[in-house]
Amino acid sequence: MKKIKIFVLVWLFCVSSAFAEEYEIKLSRPIEKGKKFRLDASSHTLSLMTEIEDGKVKDEKRIEMTVNFIARVEVLAVDEEGQITRASYTVEKLDSIDQGKVKSLLSEGEIIIADTDDNKTDFIVDEKHVGYDLEMALQQVVSQGSGTKDDKIFGTKDKKKIGDKWEIDSEYAALDMQSKKIEVKKEFLYGTVSLDDIVKVNGIECLQLQAQINVDKMDIPMPDDVQVEEVTVKAGYLGKFPLDQSYQALETVREMTFYFKARGTPGTDDEKKRMEATMENSLTTKIEYLK
Image (tube, rainbow, N blue to C red; front, side):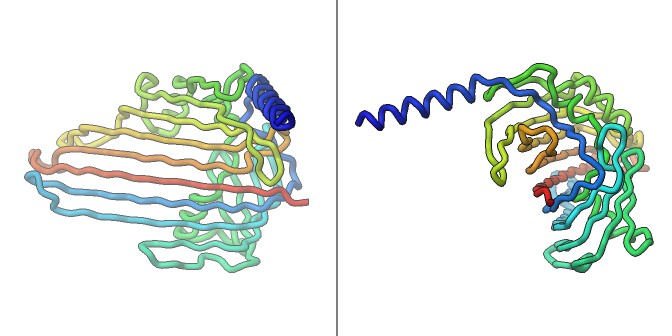
């Protein structure tokens, strides 16, 4: 019984110490040229578009696609912030599931060169730019050159303890979206970030961070005879960031749901027709550093 009490006391001390300790929050970690890691990424997209007339569904379209990508990555170039601008991806697996049909997009051993400039990434295989379908698939699972925007939007200058929560920088997030031609005002964009726990990934201690973002209204250019009734965005993020800041996030999950509702028909004054659209997208990534 005495041994059990001692064990409980030690356990409580360790737990309380972990919760009392403060940690620096850094999401955008620099990486060195020449680093190698294994990437396992999976993206899923679901789009639903419904046309309603006189209160009845007239037409409904559903598009669903999954991309699975496993590759050995070598960093070939980085920018001044240590973010990847050029990398090679040696394919272990790259396939898509489109409307239930599985299709292999590249064979094992093929090499993709990804060049990123001004947040646009070009993909090259056998010294040729890839075709449209392959490019669209790769854009779902490859992310390079994101810079330090994540820290500016989701980060904080203050150290945090397990269980702490803070607000995102809505003003910077709105400006970032406006730079991408997405008109959102900061008063309609809000969210929080929390430091949930210390977890281990492949034996490496990581900070588990979680974020939620909501956009309650945004401006979407439409013809004068089409009235936008509602536009919302909900997004979530989960990341496991090593305490050793020389490592990038080892696991991430990103989810986003976009909802749009409008009334009217372009070129007419008919307001009986309504259109509703929902798009859901998720991306899960895992990386394992190689020697």
